[in-house]
Image (tube, rainbow, N blue to C red; front, side):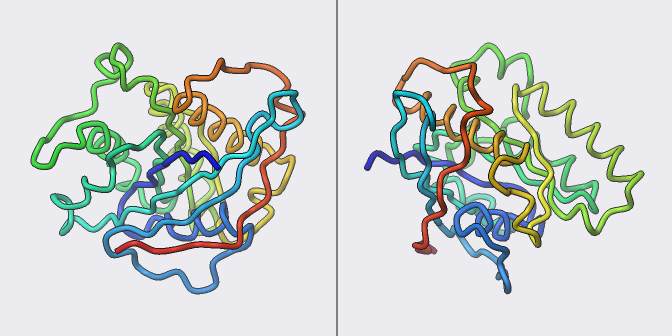
Length: 223
C-alpha cells in the first residue's frame, strides 16, 4: 500500500497527541501522554472515495513533540513530509501566535537553520504546494467570545498559507463524525497530500460524495 507522511506540529500541550489518536482510532484518547521526540500513528484513507479513481492509501501522522528543549533535534522528523497539520489551543493565544514559526521550521528542515514565515515568499516557492491544515483544539476550555476572536486570527493565517482550518474537540468523536464539515475538510486535506506526493490531477468537485476512510486499529511509536 502506498504511503504519505504528514507531520503534526504545534506548541507543547495543545492537543496534538489527542488529535492524532482521534483521527486514527476514531475515539478520544483516554490518557494522552507527553510526546518525547516523535510518535507515529497511521490511518487508512480512501483517496477520491466514491469516484472511479478511488484508491486506498496509508497516511502516517507524525506527532512531533513541541518542547522548546528539543527544537534543534526535532527537525530530523520533518524530512520527506508531504503535508503539515498545525495545531493550536483556543484557550491559549500564545499557541496561535507561534503557528507561523512552526510552519517555517518544517519548511526549512535543515538543523540549525532559522527562518521566519513570509507569506509572499511561501506563495511563490515550490514548497507552497505543501498542503497545510490548521486545527484549533480545546474549544471546550475557551471563553466563547475570546475563542471567536482567536478563530478569526487563525482564519487570516490559514488564508495566508492557503490552508483549510477546522475546530476539533478531541474529547468527542462527533467532532470528526463521518459526513461532518470537519471530516470532509480532513478528507480533502489528505487527498491533496496524496495528489502532491504522487502528482495526480486534483479533483475540485464531488467533495460531498466523499467520506473519511475507516480508522486503522494499529499504531506504533518512534522515540
